[in-house]
Structures are given as structure tokens and as C-alpha cells.
Amino acid sequence: MQEVKTYIQSLFSAKGIEIKPNRLNQFEEFVALEDSLAAVKHIFENQNSLMNKWKLKNRISDILSLQIVIPNGTIGKNYSGHIDFEKLNLSDLIFEQFEGLEEIGLYFNKTNDCIEGIPSLSGDLKFTLLFKVNGEDENEELNKKVIQLIVNPDPKSLWKDIPSDPTDQFWKEDDVSISDKIGEKNIVISSKRGRSHKNVGSFRDDDFAYAHFTKTGWSIVAVSDGAGSYSLSRVGSQIACNAVIDFFENHADSEKSKEFEDKIISYNETGEQSILKEIEVLAKQNLYRATVFVHNKIKADAEETFNTHPELFNNPKAKSYLDYYHATFIFALFKKYEFGYVILTFGVGDCPIAVMNIEQTETTLLNWLDVGEFGGGTRFITQSDIFHSTEHPMATRFNFTIVQDFSYLFLMTDGIYDPKFVVEANLEKSEKWLEFMEDLKGKNEDHVAVEFNPENTQIADQLSNWMDFWSQGNHDDRTLAIVY
Image (cartoon, rainbow, N blue to C red; front, top):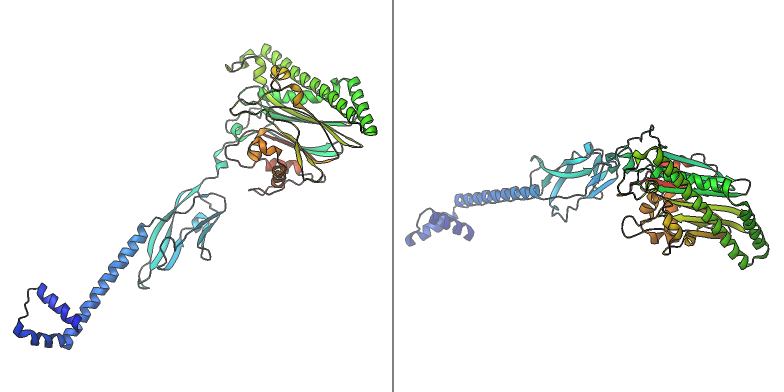
């Protein structure tokens, strides 16, 4: 009653109606009338209704202006974007539904409040949240809030694939993959033109070669990476790989080779470490001759090309015509004996060689890499100064290793090493090589697997497909040779 009296007094006062002292009793009676009480109650109800409607309008406006940020997606990739209703202060929603997600390839999972699916469109996309707030009538029209979702295009789709010119004098295939027997082992190799080359239609600079010499029982695998900034480097890498095969097949010193084999037989019979040292010296001498042979082969070709096509030699960075053929170069020779495998290696540049033991518990790096803090830190088989460097003596580039057996022998260019190992120090870590093998066997984003089974006739294609992996910023040629 007092609330009604106070309200009427305030109302009358606001309207200029004065209640005189001699009329107070009459006013009390007026306030107590049923009509008066009902009228004030009705006014109160209307006031509350107006206030509630205004609060609802404000609340809805707040939600409509609320910024709901969800993660960006990528077309063709699994997407999950959580909407935290509680954190967004949306706990008072009594109804929510999303409209327009299906067109994008997505749906709303009510169990975990996540937008999920695989986006089928890219761009600055929008979908709608239909909602009602606590207090709204069930017959009210649903409120609509537009939410933005950015779906990035597949970065792979932004790259062109322009074939190299097959009429070019020094053309070679853009992509080559092969599998074969090599002695008592098997080999699979894939060499693929990098995306940076595909994008402009330039050539594959990487190359490889391999052979098994039935007469001697030795096998060899060679890999080379032509320096992309030099126009004929693809020729240099090709010559390097073919030349080292040629050397060991046709030009190796037969007397030194016989002495080497005799020493190995002697070591096998006696196990004397002094003989092992002599074997290592003989091995390095033979490997040295091979590298000189390779260098001279490239040099002879460069001289001939310079004389017949001088117009090709127009790079101001080049100090000599041999620079145009710049290429890193690695190779591994191996042969099985009664006591195990002898593995001889050579490396110049930033391409690693490694062998994994038969138990697949330990991997050993068989060469050191020419790397620097800045671009240009690598070295090339075409540089004559590597043969008489005091900082990095040529003898340190050769390696002589004996293992009882091995599960995998790896040779790769930096197109594989950079994205998969990132830094040189990781090449010394066996766990990183085990991760690399897991990656090859399918533990990767694309779930592409290589089955290392001698009966697998599809292994070359599998490795080729695996080599298409995406790595941001790593778009160089890729060559990987694996003996298993």
C-alpha cells in the first residue's frame, strides 16, 4: 500500500496536483480504492515490461556487435574452430543454430561447441548464427549474427607447373624415379624438380647415378646438386654423377685396386688394426683419383662448351667458365665381405650421407657438410681450391667405414635435408633419422607411405609421391637415394 501511495503522490506532484493537509484523509481513501490499486499495478507492469524489452534489445545489440573470432582454415584441410559460449558471455542463449556452414563444407558439433569439417571454399567467407536470448518470446523472429571465417587457399595450388624446354641443348627430365637391385641390396631413387623451378619452367639441377660392378662386387651411388644461380649447373651435376661411375668402371688403377683387395683379405684373416689403417690410406688415395677425374671431366666439357657456345657464358658473377657448372657432389661405394660391409664415401657441399645399422637403432653420418652462416657457404666439385685447402683438407672429405650390415644407406640433396632435418646438428642425432624413417613410412601430414619391401614394384612411385611433401619456404630440387 505504501508503495502505491508514494507512487501516486509522486505522480500528482509531477503533474502539479497539490494534496492539501485538510484532504489527507480523503487521499488515503482514494489510494485504498480498488480501482486505484489496480491502475497503479497496471502501470508498474507496463513499466517493467518496457524496461525488460529495452534490456532485451540492448542485450541483443550487444551480441550482434560482439566480436567472435575463430581460427583461419585452409581449403581441403581438416578444420576445427571452438566457440567458447561461456567465455564470450553467451550463457544466456536459449537457442543457437548456424546457417551457411554446409556451403563451406563445415558443420557445428554441439557436443564440443566446435565448427568442424573440411573447407571446400577459400576466401573471406561468412556464415550466420541464429539465436534467441533468455526472456524472448518463443514466437519472436530469430536474431541473426554474421560471423567471418577466413579460409586460405591451398598454398600448393598457387604454384605453377611449367614444363622445362625439351628442345634445350642441355635438357633433362624434370622428374626421375627408379628402383633396382644393387648387389645384394635394393635401391630406390627419386629426383624431382623443385617448385621454384616448376613455377618458372626452369630445369632440374639435381642429378644421380648408380651402378653395381659385377666383376669386382662393388656398388656405387652418386648424388649431385647443381647450384641454381649458375645456368649450366644441371650439366655439372649430371657429368659429376656419370663420371664417377665411369672412373670406377673403366679408369681405376687396377694395381692399387688389387692391393686394396689383398689388404682387405689380409685384414679379414688377421683382424690387425695396422692393416686396417693401410686399407684406409689406399681407399682415400683411390677416392681422391676419382674426384680429380670428375673435376677434370666437368672442366673439359666446360671448355668445349665455352668454345662452341660462348654466348651461354654471360653471368657477371662467374669468375671462370667452370663456375657455370658449379655442383655439390657426394657418392658412396660399398661392398660386402665376410666380416661385413666396407663403405667408402666422399662429399663436397651440403648433401649428407648416412648409414643406419641393421637393428635400426643408430644412424651414422658419413660425411661433414660445407655449410655457412650466410648464402654461399657451400663448396662445389668444380672448385679447384677444394683439392689443396688448408682449412678443410681434402683427406677429411673421404670416409672409410666397416659395418657388419646396414638397414638403410641414405644419400640426399639439401632439398630433402633442409625441410626434414632443418639444421646440420640434427644429422648427428639417431632419433631424428628414426623420425625421418617414420615419415617415409607414412607418419606425415599427407599420409603418404613408402614400403621398403624388395617385392614392392611400386616403391619408386611411392617415393616420388612422398617427395611432393609441402614445407613452407623449401621449394628446391629434391633428390633422395636409399639403399636397403
